[in-house]
Image (spheres, rainbow, N blue to C red):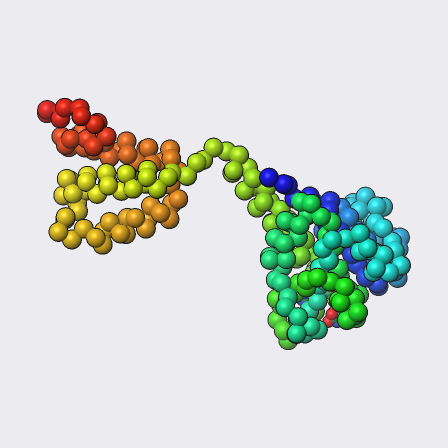
Length: 258
Ligand code: SAH
């Protein structure tokens, strides 16, 4: 399975006015494991204020690429995502940060991705938004929908981090042997369970359906693994033995006399 690559994800700031924001963004990027920062026509950069606010994420600032136009920033990029407050682009379908993150993280396995943020006051122009394949809006109170630039980057990149960790977790889970039980095994267990429940007088065979159906639901919800079905079958067999019943599992063996 392909792995997501956070180095393939570039944060692009278009015309940032406040060097302090650039520093704060370098800091959150490093917190979230991102490294690639691109600045389109920053008002002031490099800058002491940026260094101070980066709280030690100097490498992100040192490696930041400064360009003159958005086109230059994204010319090599395969997936371009624009950020905007909902008010600006009602007619365009916007992703929420979580869906945006899973799209970006999957794409990052193979392709380069850019997420574009606008100027603190003006945001992204329509012309800049036209260059984006998708839009993401952080669902804030529509009556006050504009976040501080660094806060917006923080939220978007936190979702990227979560999606990245989820992806890694899934890969690890797949690596660990945890084969789900087959339907044959599950049905065998259900039959065995029903038989034992009848035999120990827990289930009345005259009205079996509701209880069994509830139990089916319970066990299906658990997504039983092969090993777990074996444990459950083993428990049933022990119950049968202790209760002096003919264990279903002990095929052909003689009934134990107590
Ligand atoms: N008046 C501008 C606000 C710009 S805020 C506007 O309405 O667009 C600066 C940048 O922060 C935005 O360009 C965007 O990149 C990001 N941002 C702020 N609030 C956001 C939100 N609710 N959802 C997504 N991005 C947001």
